[in-house]
Structure formats: C-alpha cells, structure tokens
Image 1: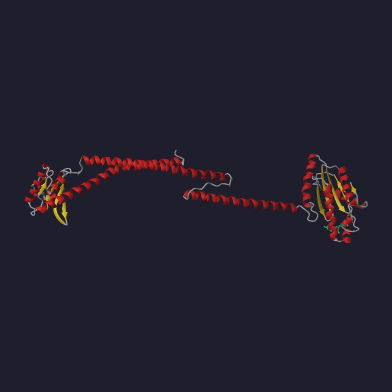
Image 2: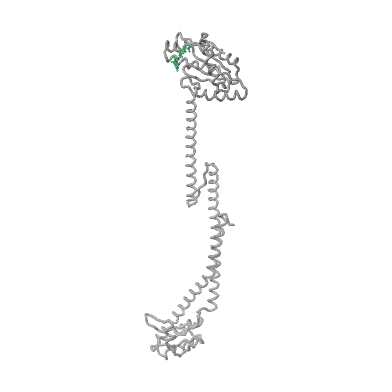
Length: 421
Ligand SMILES: Nc1nc2c(ncn2[C@@H]2O[C@H](COP(=O)(O)OP(=O)(O)OP(=O)(O)O)[C@@H](O)[C@H]2O)c(=O)[nH]1
C-alpha cells in the first residue's frame, strides 16, 4: 500500500511527531504540577521554620503549651491586623496572608498545635501517630516543630491557572517545534530520496548495459559515500569492459588471422590445398544442384626441376611467387586459385564453360611465357601447362580432378606450354 520510500518516511515522521506531542500533552502537566507542588510545599515549610525561629528568639519557653498558645494568638491577631511593623507579625503575615492558608497543622517540637487544620485545632496536642507522619521543621539539626499536611494539594486557584497557562504554553511551543522539525525532516527526506532516485536510475541504466553512469555527489553523508562508491564501481566496470572488449577484439583478429594463415600457402600467399578442398566440395555440390557450369583447371610449371637445378632452389621459389602473382591478376574474385602442391596450381571457375576457361588459361599461359623472367635471373624462361575438366558427376568431384590431371599429362606429352581440354 505505502510502497514508496518517500511515503514511508513522511508517515513515520508524522506518527513520531504526533506520538511525541501526545506524550508531552499527557506527561508534562503531571510532572509540572508535581514539581510545582514540591516547590510550594518547600517554600511553605521554610516560611513556617522562619516563623518559629523568629518567635523563639523572643520567647525562651518555646516548646511549651503556653508558647504555642501565644503564637496561635499572635497568628489570629495577624490575620485581622494591618500592622506589620513587628518582625513576628511580618513573618506571620507572609505565611498566612501572602500565601493561601496552608493545609498544614503545625505544632512545636512537643506536639503543641499552634496552627490548626482539619481535625487538629490550635491549643490541642498532635497525636503520636500524626507526629510520626508530620514533616520536622528544623534548623542546624535542631527540630523546632512539626508540620502535618491535612490536604492533598498546596495549590490555590491562582497556582492552578498559572500551571494550566504554563502547560498550554509549553504544549504550543512543543507543537511549533515539532512542526518545524517535521518540515525540516521532510525537506531533508526529499533531498535524500532525490539522491536515492538518481542512484536507482543510474543502476537501472547500468543493468541495461549503459555502463557510462556517474551520479552527482553532494555532501559527505552515507548517501554521498554510496554515490561515490557507485561512481567508482561504474568507472572500474567501464575500464574493465573496455579492456575486455579490446582483448576480445585482439583475440578475434588473431583467431581470424590464424584461420586465414591455416588456409594460405606461406610461399605464394595463395590459398592452400585444404581451402581448395573445402570450396571445391561446396561449389561442386551447388553446380550439380542448380545445373550451373563449373570448370576445373590443373596447372604445372614446365621443367621446374630443371629451373631449380640450373638456377637454385631460391630462384625456383621466386618463380613460384611471381607466377602466383601473374595468375592472381587474371582470375576473378569468384574463382578459387590455390597452390595444389609443389609446382602445381589448381583453379576452380564457377559458372564458367570449358571454352571460356580455355580462353582465360591461354591468356595466363601466354602472360607467363612472355613475362620478363630475366628480371629474376639471367637466361631464365618459364612456361606453364594446363589440363581442364568440366565433368560434373555425383562423385564429390573425383572424376573432375582425374580428368583435369589426365589432360595436364596430355599437355605435357604434347610438348608443354599449352592448355588441354
Ligand atoms: N623451389 C621450389 N621447388 C619446388 C617446390 N615444390 C616442388 N619443387 C620442385 O619442383 C620440381 C618438380 O619436378 P617434376 O615433378 O619432375 O616436374 P618438372 O621438372 O616441372 O617437369 P614437368 O612437370 O614434366 O614439366 C621438383 O624438383 C621439386 O623439388 C617449392 O616450393 N620450391
């Protein structure tokens, strides 16, 4: 339901804020009231202690029923009097008039009550059980009297109003603070989500194969660290991919070169017999299937042994190379010219009749005969003989090769430097 991170963050912040305000609304007034009461009570007890001290300074018999009665009398006088010149009466007035009437019964150290409250009346005696519950009023470790709380609260309506106003102000302040925090969190959350979205988008692009991904980095937080690492990984991946592609290309090129080399003759750079065999099988099959013409020629340099013997093996090699070059210049791209072995060549001519092939081979033969072989070696002359076949039989080309070979022998027998058909 709440699938996006943004929604989840917003909701969690809202819930947290509401929970914080609720806790504050419930707990803080209670704590405040408790604290307020404690302070008020302490203040009242201090005043009572001060009252007794003042009285005791003037009356040496403090602790007797008489002195308690005298203080009680002074207190009832202070309630009705406006004269505040005397110290005790001033203290009394501050206890009795400035403060709400405390819900305390107060007695001297021997339990003689001089301030009455509840069931305890002035002039009476505070029972032992009540005395145990009462708070001692002491100074310099000397107990001057006891105050027994007879009411649950020390707070008057003023205090309560003050307390409620304070609680409300606190709540308004807290609510305002929380709203600001919420807004700030939302802004920060938006920024965070923006960075995460950028990262997600870049990662998705990467998974599609677009490795060239870099995200903007701001700040130094965890998301920035994540983004920095992501960028570094992208860069590394890109470099590795480029290296792999390059080495792949090299391997491919090397494999192609190896393949090509394995099908080429090293000396003449013509295709070799293996390549010829592959092509011959294919072309022979196609020619039979589609009823096309296919002519095969075997060529052999005349008296090549003599050339080797007379001019050296190196000159023999040079002749082979030059002759291959001359033949290459004459044949079509679609023809297959290969060194068949030693001083023998084979030429496969697809869609070529025997007559057309004969014409081409005679052109080659004449070209070879007329080429200035003196350039290679003084006194050198070279000729070549060819045997032709266009026999298409379903025997994988065997009869064609046999016939071409027979015709080549025929050409040699008839005096060489010729084409036998
Ligand atoms: N220099 C060189 N000679 C080669 C190479 N391959 C084969 N030969 C030589 O070619 C010669 C072929 O001689 P033969 O088969 O007697 O034929 P021929 O001398 O040409 O005589 P005919 O074919 O009857 O005209 C041999 O001496 C081989 O050593 C090669 O790659 N380089």
